[in-house]
Amino acid sequence: MGWLKRLTFLLFFGILILQTGCLRYSFTGTSIPDGVNSIYIPFFPDQSNSGFGDLSDRLNEALIERFVNQSRLQLANNESDADAVLDGSIISYSNRPFSIGGDEQANQNQIQISVRGSFLYQMDDEALWSKSFTGSFTFDPTDDPINGEQDAADEALEQIANDMFNDAVSSW
Image (cartoon, rainbow, N blue to C red):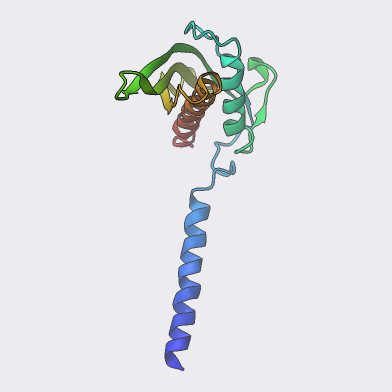
């Protein structure tokens, strides 16, 4: 019967450790600096000549999803009402062959998007960071070239939004 008690104790202890470990990495807003309750995320102008009229909208949605829906920050309507500002522009977009099949046709294309961004606390004089972020994703252009490219662009934008969020929260 002693082994059953030990097994129960180890199981309970293991679950306790796992739960505490999960809480440590939760971005629920508990580690956001005091006085920072809102963020302003303007539309990032698309300077990439991507051909997509809604690329800026799609990036904005991905950023709001990460910064507002996954933290306690509220979305501010303008920069002067915000405690933090995430700003930038889409600087490049490419759709290039990634792998070539036996018939010398591309069987995988890669979408690559680069965004220049900066993150600033309004109480500070300088941006916490100002740098470029790149996201990429491959798709099969022979399957559904239009939707495949759009889906790959969305995935690349999600990578960029995740990287921007992670860089911001790493300082929290």
